Amino acid sequence: MNNIVTRTVSGSAFVVGVIGSIIIGAYACAVMMLVFILWSMIEYYNIVVKDCIQIGKYIGLLSGVFLFVAGFFYAQNMVSGRIFTFLIPLIVLIFISQLYSTNPHSFLAIAKLVFGILYIALPFTLFTGMMFPSLDATLDVECQYTPHILLGFFILLWTNDTFAYLTGMLFGRRRLFERISPKKSWEGFFGGLICTVFMSLLISIIFPIIAYYHWMAVSAIIVVFGVYGDLVESLFKRNMKIKDSGSFLPGHGGILDRFDSVFLAVPMVFFYFKVLVFQ
Image 1 (cartoon, helix red, strand yellow):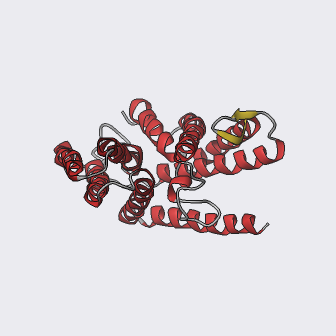
Image 2: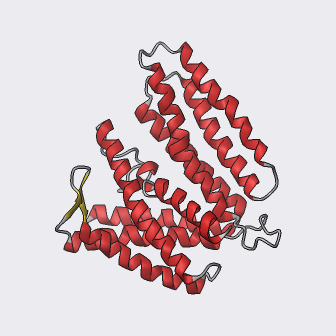
Image 3: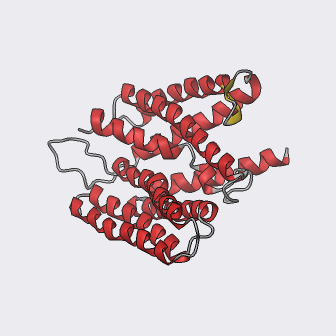
């Protein structure tokens, strides 16, 4: 019971903080995202490259921050796409830094450092495409901050997490992917899917920025790839032989644990928006 109360209180505080940052404005939202990028990358690097020389980790963190900041201003049409070329020397420096490491697995450390940018910083950067969507191809509105899509994304994500957990706990019998995550069930998956799709219809009324069928498609993408993201992070923790990535939220684990479903869902939602919605 104490664990449930702890999870509820800490989870509620987290939700309020995220929603509040998004509502306050673009820069408050960006600061929140930067904190999440740094915190999650630090957790990841502390797990996978403990023996890596510190300069390699610092360059990796700087690369992740730079990628998000560049994406944030690019999404507003304030800078050109050329800004991303400055990421090239940072990546090259990661390779060079490991030449000075005495770690016998230093080349493997390069892969782990670069992967942290791809796995963590890139999905958060793609959030900027939801913050500044191109609502009308005939109008120059790329610079307009639009929080509705981002709010809708997180509401759908949390709806799925909540109802998949509840239905799985109450009715779960058939294991979804027992080898990786023994507690997940097909009943939980479909319970989360049904509730999230219903929530998407409600969101389409509250945030009619896109059509209801787009919200329904987004909800399905979030459920499917959110589960895959969760499973990937479970695989990661099994490989690393750890229970949680950190202690960011009492009862929830680390920041990586809190955003595991985001890392694959965001790229696929971004892809959907760019191909079928905001062309």
